Image (cartoon, rainbow, N blue to C red; front, side, top):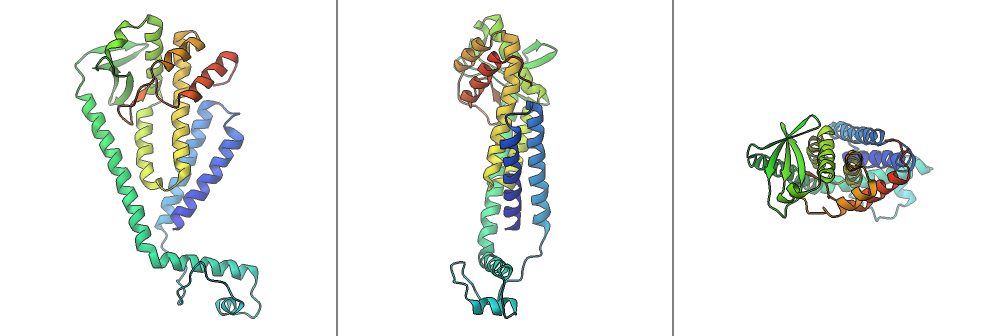
Length: 289
């Protein structure tokens, strides 16, 4: 219970600082590093509090959080004639911990069930990623010092990239018919995901989810990190394409469903925020990145 409270309250406080003070005024890499610090803080603090076993001793009487607090109860609890507001807070805390003590096995069962479900999801996604690497037919593509191992896909499939010891590029049939500027924009965008090590980042986030699946702030952090990665990759795509507006129209035409949770795709969501970022960059090329 302390584990849930500490991680949730800490992450909510740091997220509020990020959202109101840093989100609109700092460079992209600084925003990502602050979110990394937020994740590390909530994880290590959560593990530390989880290791603590000292909890308030449950009251001998079975209280209910809906019970009315009488003065007699407070006097008996604090052993003084004139209970203060502090005594009332301590009494309420004792009631909550007594309730937790009564249902602690159900709480532990829910927490551990969520942990194993999230961990199995991560392992299954890694297994699917490993199976994708076996589809590599030996074709290679070099672009700006990077070597992509091509995985041939069907005509209707989408382009995507991931790293698993090597850099793999999902190569659908329609890629062969693209103009040079569009092809270079895709390769620059996907190459940026390799440089950012986004596959490793998503695997780590998936593992951390098993410890923080109950925390709504964790999902906000994960969504923000994915969005920042797309912003950085879109910047490279714009440079290769040469025209921000044309690039925005191009990625709108590439919206397709993800094949794997750890594969980065050029047309993945949230597309609206990315288009706004691209157009904002077109209007203000001096925007720091």
